[in-house]
Length: 86
Image 1 (cartoon, rainbow, N blue to C red):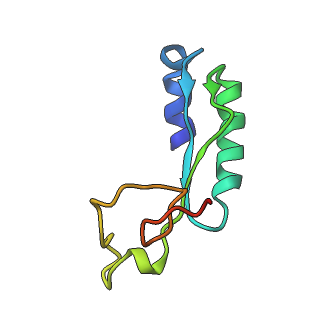
Image 2 (tube, rainbow, N blue to C red; image 1 turned 120 degrees about the vertical axis):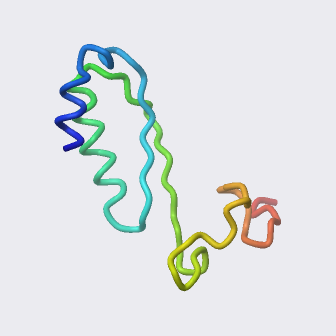
């Protein structure tokens, strides 16, 4: 279905930039690689880097809803908020 939508919008999206994001620990990178190939075929300009989101069991409650939706994403900080770098 996604490929059909992308094909339908080919003329509107041709030569437009695209950013890719994935989530999950397994297969997200593979999905991005596959979609990047499709976007190149549609003559879109996919960014060289992508956003990879990881949601762990600690991030969700019993009903699989995010616990803290107000917490900003910060890949260089630990859960306690202190920096991982020195």
